[in-house]
Image 1 (cartoon, rainbow, N blue to C red):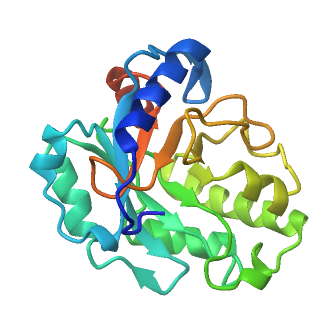
Image 2: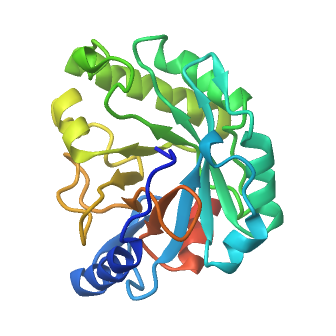
Length: 252
């Protein structure tokens, strides 16, 4: 996810993305219930990791950020050294924030990684300022020969379910799932087992819309539409207004 990359034509893509929302009649998952979104004014946000280091949060807020996801952990042996500063800094600036975990399913069980994540920043509270924890699951960046981490499709689905169950047990919320349609359909065998209970954070760059969604989902909640732009890190939209975003953060 959030890595330092060269600048891109983010402004044109944002305009195209907003236009696509307005034209497409998309729907928002608030507590996984369809509610028509005010598509002409989607809330703008971003996601960051240690690559962004010391973020100027007041400036980021002034540029229009309403929410941010901050990388907290990876596997069970990494905590971002900038997590606390970024997470608390965003809140102090009036930005709704949440934490995400980068999954390495070949290293340990889903429940083990979920527990590590929650213990190191991935908690949730119904204060209207805290987004549900997020699971970042994508192609293996460390071993291209095992892009699905050496797990069968069935085992991958089981791993994600175990991660989700532990997050739900500890925080009261199901995690948002960040992925791409290609990864999901390839590595889970187009499983539809999680779509009805998990909000989708879809990654699709170089496009005017979010494109085909992973199997089972009929709408996205967050869309990462570019890997650089006006806000630090990756650029995102929420499929609804800022008011709806706050309701989603509170859990209803």
